[in-house]
Image (cartoon, rainbow over all chains, first blue to last red; front, side, top):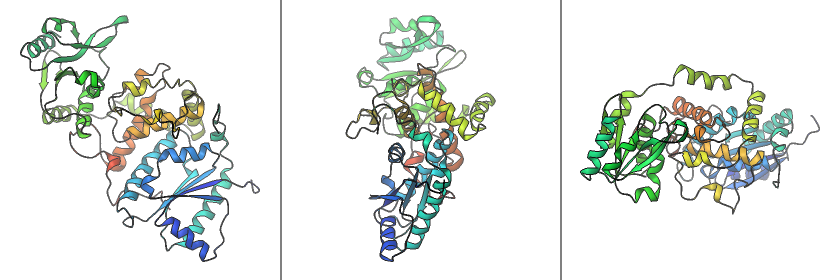
Length: 144
Length: 266
């Protein structure tokens, strides 16, 4: 599996994690290049359907990250998102989907190093888990 | 049953309500929903163990609301659905009256407070068999569970009977009908079936009142209520809230506590 290059999609909020990831770059820190970042206004906007669509589109792993609790630009978006993630993880597990494929995190605009670490660790984990063949096999008629 | 019929006759004769939403004898020994609008026709009403459908599903239908004030023959699950619909501002105090049918009496519940008290007095945990059913699937390995649901969902026809039967799936425009973007693919293939069933369960998380009508409505017998039950337990154990117990207050997923658990967040 060492030569497997996982496809990782990161759903991040505009105000904290996106700026944090920007800081990682401007600080010239190197990290795993397999991640595709998608910017959202807030973690509260990151619907579970987007995660499913990422898997359907061929993602092997997903990162969802935003502002730390109490730091939300819209004051409570991340608190609401946190509750939704608890429930979504419960449902994924019950349906037999490995919850290790979705990593939730808080990364602030000042945590460039944490972002690099998060991406590296997630990439390593997904590499160990291998391609998400079970999900990609579901892609059937007219979907792609 | 006689108590129910005479109460229905009285309510219609005195014009307290304009329609009784209840059960009548249907084909094959089953009960079906009936809308009684004249006192003379109250004898069509029945109530026995075959009356399982959650009649609260009709409360949000415009064609039913048009009939006027309703009295609803209510099972315990229907009472919870009424409270949840009230909490979500779908029905208002005084718009309906619930008829809780007992062994040989009928209790008319005219206010949400009365329904709350009635539900609270009879509230119980799941039966041992119901707990065992959920536990059976949780005890499976991840891969076994995935195969189980893949097989179940492979039979899904996307008929959306689960949605039609659910008293809390009342959106007039559902995400499955959105095609820009097309969130849920129209054909009934494995991926779309999984996405639909995940979405249905997630949209009911913290709202489902556990009537089980989704599973009963399913023409291919997918045990859909298990998904809801799993989330009901998650919401109760993690957030300590249960839907359908109060006519006021937020759903578990439309509120939060600053100290909600987050041990899974890196």
